Length: 629
Image 1: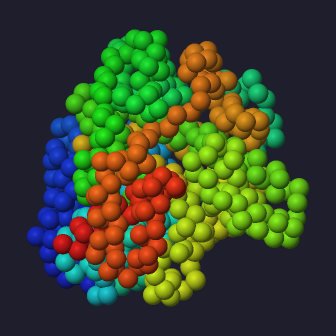
Image 2 (image 1 turned 135 degrees about the vertical axis):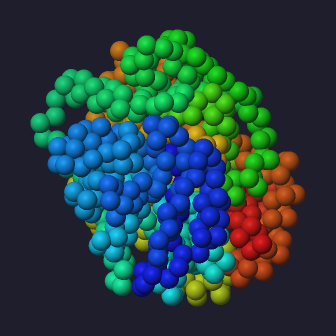
């Protein structure tokens, strides 16, 4: 696991600013504290920061082919590299190292742009081909590893693992993208390919960027996830195959020359990964958990049960329920506003893990694979009613009920029907957008000033989901929203959260449940095997019954959260009021001051729970202060 950075003159061979390249690499030192390397030639500069995992003695980067005409800088792991080495050697390629990086240069020579389709792993890399005068950037299928770029008006292309590397160039504009702001306050993160900055972009998952000197930039998708259902499905055989595939996905992620372990929350997904690891390892598995004093958030007893069952070497640390001192740190870690408050416990569990291991396996991806999120259940309940009534009848009926019914955040769940009425007035995609939005339209849009509304030119964040939905081959509602999450929430929130928190501690995290072959297989399972009635991850849980207790498999999902609603009415009350109602946001031209004041007052009084919005505003205000220094 590493950090990469680079400079490329798309129009000629202007000398590379070596000092800028060094600053870019140094700015992401945390991603690779073991070694640094650079390659510079006319018009090209490649930088690298290394976290040594495999081939500790000879895996330095950038790496070149035999004659030095193809050079790569790379972040990630290619788990099938040994098989590729054998194949490439049979085709006449010569290798000088035993690491996976060298596979990339020879795969590029052999297969060109299609080389990415041969890799099973997590990766973001750049290849410079001197003979073809071509720079090639690529990102893995599911977006586990990040890659950002900026193209200046004079044709200079900058790229880096994190935005902060690109901002080492003072000429890069810090101007915010209005559409990205709207996306952020809807989703809690900025979905690909935008960043919060108008002149910096993310290379989306499963995409490549190719630029031949003197030519235009070409960004292409090389893979997409199909939800075409397996018509030959057999329940018992599928359960056995699921476990076999999971075991294989875990096994190929155990290669390491440094200490390795796993996150263990006590949930189904992380417990499943640990169970597979224990069956594949002769030594006790290192497992890491955090606990909370507040029982509403504490899963440590379940983690301890799994650790005891598999005789792991278990490490636990308690995180204070008021662990809000991390707020300013998180602003720097995430580079752009990021409103998932579970970044706090994620940061702490990565901090704990790094004390004991350099590589950790996680259980991320199980909810996307097998429809485990509660919102899938709620969405499908709504969708069944949507399908019984035509939109022409639902829109006026439930639209009126949604407008008239009061917002009862303080009431029992069965009385909080406003959100449901609003969702029933919409079609499937708009209804799912309503479900995943951290701030619904009726609250978010009035926050914006008249000036900012004009800048948006009618744009609404739901267009992100509509664009992905138009491309999906899903023929049922559940598969469609899973597809949407694979293209938005998973890379934009979950994988971003873990990558930045882990790399802030120089920790590599591997994700077996997101092995792309496992994901492709799971996507083809019948939807009723994933969400069976009101039970998510049904086939996954049934498959794991020989490996985990009923108590672990079938308990209510807790999530990984912190009590921000209480913080904002207690110890963070004045900080929130100062940040949200101060001159920074008030003078930005983005927000209506009166609307911000109403939000703060309503939350403090207990009339409404605006904690997701206030957290988003707090992180946004912190980012704007930092980027405008």
